[in-house]
Image (cartoon, rainbow, N blue to C red; front, side):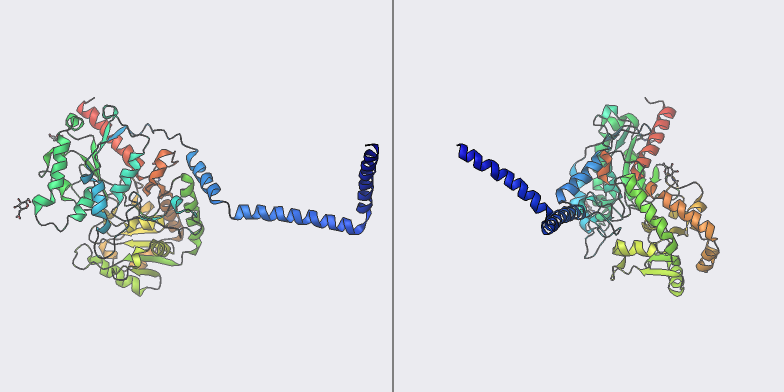
Length: 470
Ligand SMILES: *[C@@H]1O[C@H](CO)[C@@H](O)[C@H](O)[C@H]1NC(C)=O
Ligand SMILES: *[C@@H]1O[C@H](CO)[C@@H](O)[C@H](O)[C@H]1NC(C)=O
Ligand SMILES: *[C@@H]1O[C@H](CO)[C@@H](O)[C@H](O)[C@H]1NC(C)=O
């Protein structure tokens, strides 16, 4: 025992003394420093790896945590509590399932999944989120307004599940899709059958009967729709308010214009501010005076001006043309469309088959000042959304000016152009459909759907006062 103790003690002291000795030796000191240095480098390398390629789960939970933090989505008092009527799927989801995939024509089915948003885009902007589930950019189909509106309304903080508590009633009939899928139906009895069904159904609801439909609204993402055009066809629903991407000029007592959906569906005010900042940086690199993205529309009277517009644009060095010849499909690429529009000061918006164009909203999203050829292309349409003075954010060319578009636009002073562009950029949140996911959180700006609900609320409340309904 004693000998063991004796042995262990000296062994410790000998280790300690030999350690001191070793530390004094220069070669050991060098080796020790090397080890510390390597260990530090390794730690730094790990740290670098972690921040450059964060583990996927960390990235997602961070993003969702960021998204769900402002969760206290409260109903804006300017928006009345609204109730969404429950309809048979044949009035909405079945139309999406069957018809929507091949609405426009031809051999390509536009992608209208993701609750109407369409295919997610990852290339726009360049630093888009890695996770496709979190992008703000989608190849949204121009007819998708009614589907996106519905998706957004479903999760809206002002939605109520109790019809007795509601002041506004939303009828989620996808009338535009129905019309689009039925446009070739020659038999009018068959074509209108679903609309007649809907009118019968609505007329049987107590909530509808109370007000004669005056507090009810529909959203239509398509321009021409006979159902609401002809009040004699369905007198029961004649007083229902219709939000549509194109009101009928002169027949709009109950019709109000809402913007076409473009490609940007932000979830927060921050997403919007980032894009606006990018456009402001880009302003200095706009290389062309004007741009035209579109095609000839032979056989349409309204589109006669297009031939003039295209001839002038293709001839001018200061115009960027994109020919939307359907066989070439160059206009189905949102990247290309926005890129062209981001490189011009003005974007020409001549009428096509209809007076309004989705392209107007693509242009605004790109910070390109729209140039109109008819007041019905925007001013008489989107009064809820646009500044009172059209000249603050756009140009309208009179028929006498149509033959020298370049001269007319070049004449506008640079400071005026810059001011108009700034107004267009400020308007982006106002004419944007926020991502439906964002409805659960505090958005931080008023998008198309919020503004529509605010204006509908004003209307229904003033109606009630004038009619003395309570
Ligand atoms: C249209 O369709 C309805 C119902 O299917 C049918 O009763 C009617 O005869 C058709 N009309 C014509 C002109 O084909
Ligand atoms: C619609 O409103 C008009 C004018 O206020 C009224 O005369 C008509 O009876 C209303 N229609 C229905 C179905 O309530
Ligand atoms: C956009 O909408 C907001 C809120 O409705 C409004 O205050 C603002 O003036 C609008 N912007 C423009 C440029 O009209």
